[in-house]
Image 1 (cartoon, rainbow, N blue to C red):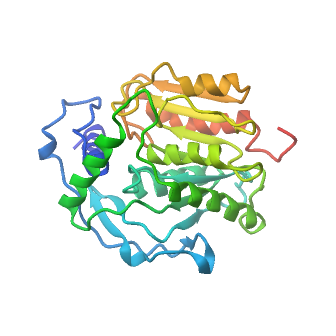
Image 2: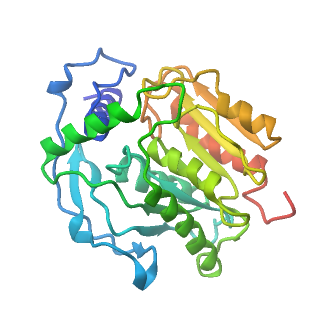
Length: 319
């Protein structure tokens, strides 16, 4: 099986599991019948030895509530009630001092831990950027895979009725956990070799929505110093006065979040806040590190270059 075909099938399987939608149109062979796509199968929970309880001794929930699955080797988790943060640090001689909290997507009912979590974090660490994978709390779903898929489909259909407005499917616990993750990274900045003034976020789909909600909810000094907004809704937002620079990346054939003329970018410009837009010709929704044969494969390189341009990969000098 070619890499392109493998990526298509993984994307389709994850799409079915994450949002209960038909297989997304990707480059390469025509989409198959969604019913023929590989289903999620039960998986053993990984050990996660480096995962830190997000609120220390006060962390709610239990790992026993989690339901782990996989499709084509991609691990996903549902029913997270005990939030954690997992550091993925660069070699000390390569560290830039920058840090990124990584928020995977999954419609607030599932987290694509491999596709948009650990794999993203490792690529960032390879670039000298300390990464921290946030396993945030999720809305509950049935333990049974089929029943969970049906519920997720219903909630997604209800939460995405108006493409011109932000999805109504939200989870305030995810925002609270993101704020706590930023606070944890800054509190342990010395231990992890991080500059507390260069701590940002990158999120994918629902993770992008979590990034945006965190920016909007944060008090001065609490939010991310920069924000990666990867295939999030392109709708209008009330940009706060202390808004961080925004890196917005989305495919123009995204079937969930149409571009709408990119009003969120216009809002950032109107607020005189830094913003950069990457609108890829093809890539659909959920491209992660990129769909082979498309320019979405450049996303993380472009994000890294944007961080460097904004002086986040060098010691703070009043950028």
